[in-house]
Length: 294
Image 1 (cartoon, rainbow, N blue to C red):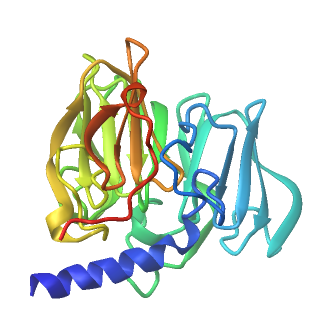
Image 2 (image 1 turned 30 degrees about the vertical axis):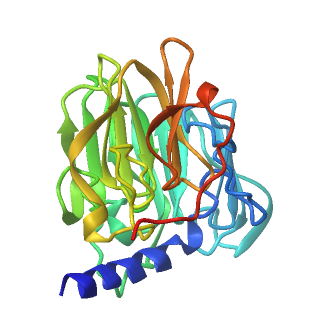
């Protein structure tokens, strides 16, 4: 029974990734190198997702490209930049969902309803429904991060909040859909959603992660199966990965995780190659491995 459930979850997950392979600008000719890293969303000005390109310029958010989700307007494709919103501090996009945070701390969302990121409960039949107008999702926030069908928000009081799908225990619990934002961490100074894994840095600089570990991306010393959403790859209890962290981000293929520490070092793990954080300065080889545990 466990294998059957895992297989079904895997199929659902694979189907959902059709529009998410370009969250960090990944192209078809990627070499899956652990050296090829994406910028953290808080630093990014451009994100590509689901056939669209978004850019943030002078606090104005623009988009162009494919428009089957209705985010840009009524046409199916836009070759020129379309203004989406003004007064934008930061944004993120994944699986045809767009979130943006305004300068006054409000979080808005648009795009596909799947997973509950837009705080609309959906089932398999209506997962492709679209929301083409901005919906106010949360407020009093200073940072956001969007994963595959879930969102993290860091409020001004430094608490971390979660909503969306949590089948991999990204919310520290296995839940189908969390529609109302739920506090999962009392205090943190940074958040990062990495596909189906949640990460945050606490006030002391300790990086914690929970959720999917199918590529060893949680750095707890265990290789994953290589197949997201299998039950044996779920890490339910937030794991303290590394101390003295000041930043966390991921590779373009989201299988490797990186963290910068306060002494200027950078560590890498994941890809079913490095099972624990490895100081990049101490190794000459960073290419991802295709091997998985038996």
